[in-house]
Length: 282
Image (cartoon, rainbow, N blue to C red; front, side, top):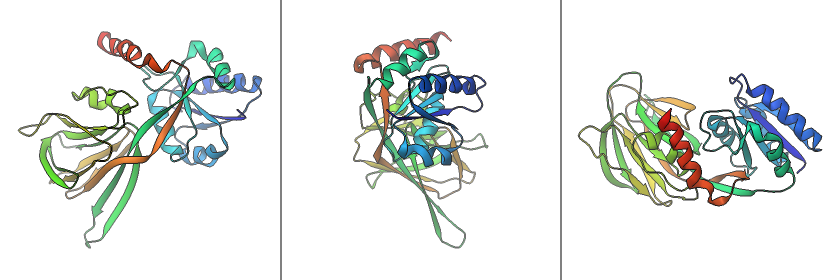
C-alpha cells in the first residue's frame, strides 16, 4: 500500500487533530498520504484514482460524504470513529496504531455494499424537463418540507401503480441504510451483504403502513402531488426542495461502496446488538 488519503470531518473539533495523528502514524510506516475535508468532494475526487485506501476520521456521516465523492471508484474506505455509534466505522481512537499497522501489512478483507441510484425529474414552467442523478449508500428520502403537513406521494413499483402515501414521507434504503432512518421509522434490519432494498413509509395516515423488501432488479417511482414543497434527501446531506409534480426514480446502482475491514466477517450481529443497546440506554 503506497498512498492513503485521510478525509476528516471539518466541524468535529477532534477530527483535524486525529487526522494529523493518522498521517504521522502512516508516514512512520512508510506510506505517502494526503488530507482533505469531507466537505471538499472535488479535492477527494481528484486524488482517489491514485490512492490505495481512504481513512475517514469522524463518524458515519463522514463516510457517506466520502463514498459520494469517490463513486464510481473502487478505492476502499476504513473509518476511524469519533462519532456516537459508527455503524460503518471500523477503528476506535484507542486502537488506532494497531489498526493502521494491520491495514498497511495487508490484513483485512473487502466489504462490498450495495448502493441506490436516484433520478430526479422536474418540469419547468415552459414544459421543459431537468434531470439530476444521485448515488446513495444509505437512503433516498422523500419527505415533508418546512410546512408541518403530510405529503402525498404516488408510488409505483416496476411500472405498476402501488399506493398513494399520505405520510410524512417515504424512505428507500439499502441494507446499509436499514440501521439508520429506516430503522427509526419502523423498518427491518437487513444484513449488510444483502442487495435488496427497503421501501418504508414515515408516519402514514390512512394509507399503507407496512414495509416492503424489494429485490435488487426492481425500480420504484415516486411522484409528489402537493400544494406545498416536499424535500428530497440523499444520505442525510444532500437536500433539495420538491415542487408539485416532481418525479423520483430509484433503482439498484451498478456501483458499490468498498470498505476495508479488520473485524471478523461474522461480527455484524454481535456489533449490531451492542450498538443498539447504546441507543436504548442513552
